[in-house]
Image 1: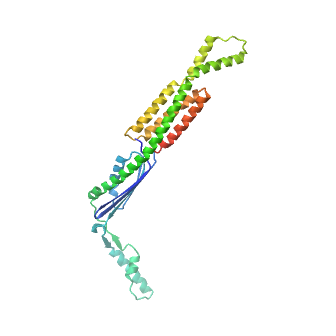
Image 2: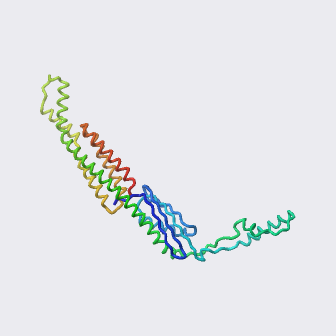
Image 3: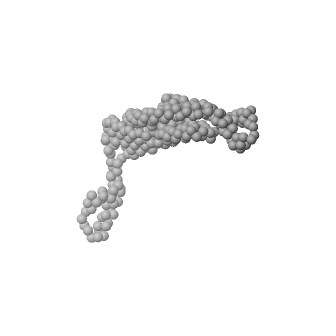
Length: 293
């Protein structure tokens, strides 16, 4: 199945007193790489979140932000740091006396020092919170997957058109390859005649043997068969339910190898031009496959 690795989605869920928000973006990457930003105090949920992502996404960099807001009383408790406040006031009183001032130190001055009032970390029922967060996370990942599929459909259509073009050019190469034996014989005769200037009589049997050797060295029938097989395999991977990015990338390497060999054996300019055109299409396929999960 063709899925793009680039997508964005977000989801929000109200489960009083909790407000849950999940925002997720995915980008191209050779492997699954999850970057998670999670509200302070809920770090214990990190592994659960990453496990769910790994079950839904096979490859790509996933940047996910999970915000958990607790509007209940347990999430809005504060305590005064009395020892710190008393110590700070005593220091200010001593300073006032040293400067000959008798006015009392305002409360605002003490609070401005910071750290006098602190939020109380209430004990959290992480299992209960997870039961509320999981549907929100799943909704965001489902939307992300839907967008990846839409982008994947566009990539798949481009792949199909390029594969059709490669198949047409491969058939043209195959037809041109059938002419190689006759061409090899003709070139050999012309070369001998040019060297001997017609003085030496040409041995037809020897010519046939040499031409056969040249044709065998230029034979690309095996490469053509494998290239046809690669086209079918490419289409099969596109239709399969499994992630196709890595297999397609490896397959394109084999594809290129076949056409490199054809180019090395090619003895006709027209055939060489067609092979170059195919390799250009393969390079475009390779670039696009980097976007596939």
